[in-house]
Length: 268
Image (cartoon, one colour):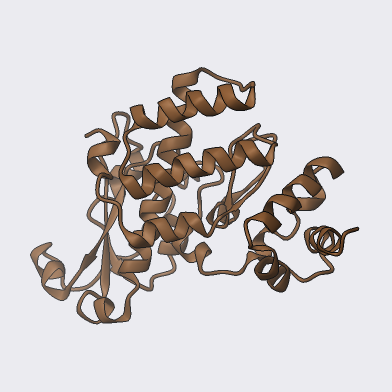
């Protein structure tokens, strides 16, 4: 199934997850790692605030409007031309990675928020892992298909989808009746690694929905990894987005980013 068919119904929790992200200038794909992606939006090699902002708007449009990959690619082409961006990799590959990774992560984080509602947990105390329809499925993801665990099992903090590039796995709420239908009298035991392989791509072993609930301290060190010109341009973009007060209150004014925001707002 094409991604636009699977994610053609935008919902509030997914949009809220993405809109709370902070644009982060990065040189490489691993400049943000693991749970940091739950709070930061990046496009590898996109270092300019205006460029990142344009990409953020295009992704937001795809999430809230249920836009297709082809629609996003048209926006991608316009953003590249407007900003004169030179990037690595082919156009189709880069645009697909940006689109699918962000749309899927927003969907999954939004679903986690829905699945975590106390009223729903009372009726559906379990979660079931289901393998997606990837063309080249990972053996571990196939092995996890049909696994039913308690909704508060620690396994979900590291194995809630996505679990890698292109992963299409999903999680569904399950009741006692669903457990019985699956021929089980109790939830499964959390799957363990096979041959030292976790089944999770490097950097993906986190739950974006859980990360979204944490404060911005998971991004506290990002300004220190940027050169001064880019770091200050980033700080200016935060001020213009009206997030400066919230971010500095969460990070503290004595962090590198907090100091920059404080300097700029005081006219330094």
